[in-house]
Length: 373
Ligand code: PLP
Image (tube, rainbow, N blue to C red; front, side, top):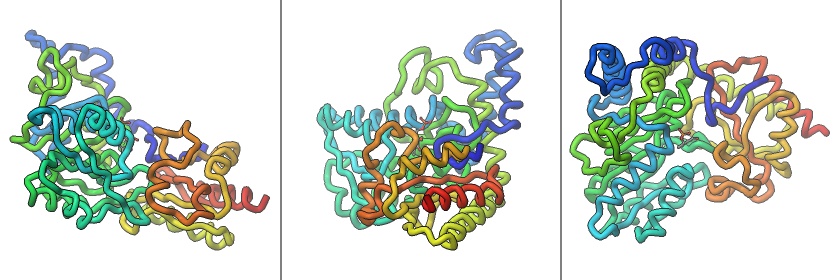
């Protein structure tokens, strides 16, 4: 199989697996217990928290482990909302967020909050001016993703967060597609809350984290035995936490060379498709996650392309993996206004460091054969 859907998920790195193994086998102590057997588990969680914090320029006590990106997004939005007097206020987000944000916003709207969905340009970029215009009194939170999961487009988060700060409004970013792939530093970005997920950077599934800037008034998300300083209770997923830290550490070491490789392969793919005379437009922004390509072929059906490539052993995506069962155009594709004759033929190809030149040639020749038919 040629796997070209790294935005959906990635393979667990062997180093992360090795780091996880002891916590799944002999080191099974509950870190909250008092006997010495639990000391190693406590230390492992604490070291992982340090590593993750330093990877994003945060302090260890600002990192809270969650079950993944979806939970971190839910926590950020609901907990800020639930702190508002009379449970009222406005949240500003973008029209192209992941459903973890959009469906949380829909829920908050149902219980009385107001939500503004900022439009985006042709490549999915939110404008700072639109945000500044929308920042009216009563806004309690702005949430804009660092990089879009369907387009790979990177948003101008530092500028957007600065606009929010001028109005004293908290800023959250869903950095699930960005962490491990591009430099992410909470100080440089100026964000108050940030979500991430391990399985997007070759860590295990079902583990992620929420960064909460020290001093941010936020409600606990899961009530129980008081883990994560009482903010997110439940016995820690130690193997997951350790695996996530190991995977992130490894990604940071190879980030630059991986980015160069992924971008070279992406350029090669585009070049091969152009040389083959295929008619397409590129939707990803100029600034995008390395190796990420949203592309629309004229007069084609994205799903048909996916299934034909699948028969050739090539895995790509239409829209996002999280709504892959939907056949209608995704909200992102609708928001970026792809020319009518190209819109239905949109696919997402997301390359990783494990792809190579031969695979790129096969993807290009697979697409070429489909169109030749
Ligand atoms: N946010 C974005 C931008 C994503 O791409 C995803 C996963 O596809 C999520 C949130 C959800 O993360 P998780 O799968 O860890 O719940």
